[in-house]
Image 1 (tube, rainbow, N blue to C red):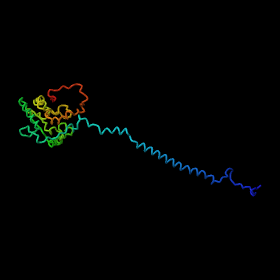
Image 2: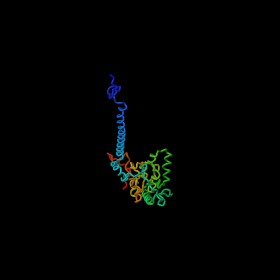
Image 3: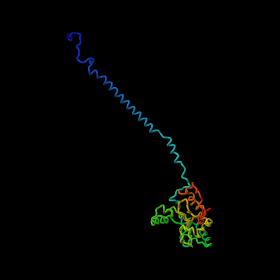
Image 4: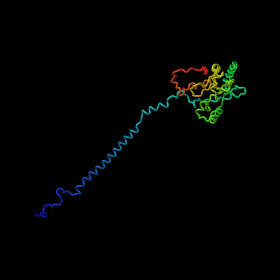
Length: 281
């Protein structure tokens, strides 16, 4: 019986049971929930990233007091050990003696020393002559320009490397001869030994070894000297007044070369040959 036309009775809608809510009405609440979640997630993400960035910034900007305290004392540390003064290839820097303070020690006036050193050398030479020993001055005062030639020009002529040349000749500005207190001595009876290690076998060297301290002269570069300069038995220096002593004392305080460290004594004392110079008082 068809009741669709009866009054007060709603007409039945087509569709499966339970699906009586229109589609447009059914989908609207889901869209609203999703639209409310998206802004919340975005705000939370931004706040989280901001918090992480702020935390990293604080960590990176934190001072490091331990490193600052460890590095701060360095500028106030004392200067390097005075027992190892600055040197160039084992040689110390010396000031050139004024020409007004130089005095000849040879008849031709070509070889000069400072006045105090010249007077003592002449007295020493006279004393040696009385014993038949002839002390011949080979070289005395040398200017920095003279040393320029002896170091660089001779080095080039012989094809020597710098370190090898420095073992036998000081660079300009670093020679004891600049001071006017240093003198190279030969034996007038055996000139073939001039400027040679063989000079230690001459009567002149043996006399100097015994008597030079009485005239305030000492050998500058003995065997195994701490400056690492080659043994020069012919090279002597005057240390008989305050200026000369202050000029040379630094060389005495140089630490020994790496091959013979000062902190490692030799297990067996090396006997001193009779031709090696005695220590200068």
